[in-house]
Image (cartoon, rainbow, N blue to C red; front, side, top):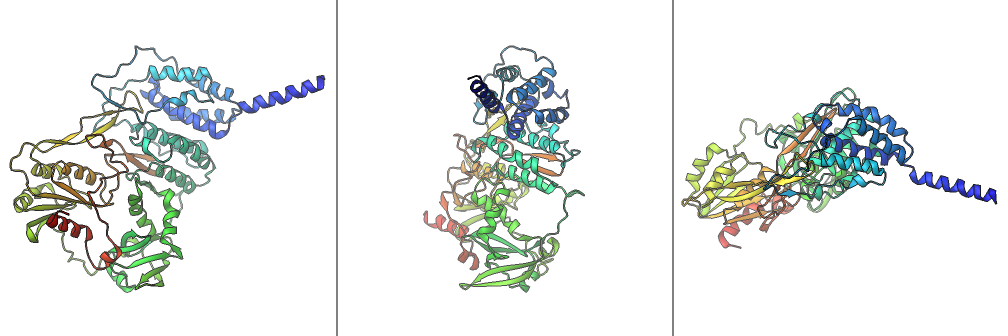
Length: 549
């Protein structure tokens, strides 16, 4: 009987011990959250008194040795206690008139099953007695200055890599305005990437993991640039002498970049590519999907295109579709300089018109080239037209205000923002936004047409929102890139990245992030239209002006 009881007790103790065991990923993910929370909330740390990065590097070896939840919690409790007492203050009252946006805010992880009740209470107490910043959010906001000194870390060291991941993950956690509309929850992303960071053996492996992590933001503003160094593998790249669009899972050439090289291989506007090195365009796209950040599919296809037309080998087999037949041609691709040099047009490149007058008294403005100094002449030339087409399939030159003043009869609000609330990291607050126009009896009376597509991003989308206030505006084209607002940028040892920094919404609260500017009339270029040299979007706009349909 005693033997049976002993066996029972042994099994029970092992079961209890097993229940209290904690995995490395669980420990590291929880540590990331605690470290980031304390970085922004603890008065002593948020004020810059401590080198919080070094503190983490010192604690990670101890955390790695913790076997149970109790051991892990105790390390974190002692860590917080070692920082010294946090002064209890009167309940923090939000300023009058502040309307919060809380869709990104979540500190429910305080009650993590890995934490002791004592640890959870300590975290809650720090939240309630958090650091109060005297810094204001605005154009000169420098709240991320402490993120910009990550150049001396050894990215071949596991803990240094974890520090870089933690720093990046937490700035997104507390200061990315669109976290709430990401496809994957940011918590889940952390648990997913930690093992890959730990297991990465080379700088290239590590940067690949971080690039994938950045892509999870689903934000077209996100870029990820690797700095060349002695530690990273040096690669040469070769380029196709043209660029284009992805249409119907094919690559259609829309612009020649290296004319003599393109002519030698029979490449021209409308050329259709179906495979590169025996892989279909669709297969190549899917291979690259997890590496590219984009708010929506049209933005992704636009951002993936340059990577398709770039090769690590100068010898490339390309399959073309011509007159219903497929033909594979071995090509030589060249370095960037040679592949992007239009020799035939050198010295004779025609300048793009800033504005012009079409037949039937219709004006046209190229928003990608017109500048504020050109607006008075544009207004004088086009003020009596029956319609003006504003082509924003490009990036404007800061002309939104002077043009919208011309278009609007009254002052109108066109955008509102959410800004990070620095005294409660993770929360945002609504701002009054921006107005455009003024009381103007001489405003433009004709139709306002705005052309948009996937090349319309950020200021392009913002400008379109501004022009929509005219009341007689029609958006024609296709979905835009869906990324508006300024960009927060960060430098780390070996790479540079950033993301959309403020939330941008219509005055009624409608989102633009990921959605983009929704066209009133949808029209996209076709393969046949490109081959025939047509601008089908502009043609549709002209038809609408004449028929109203």
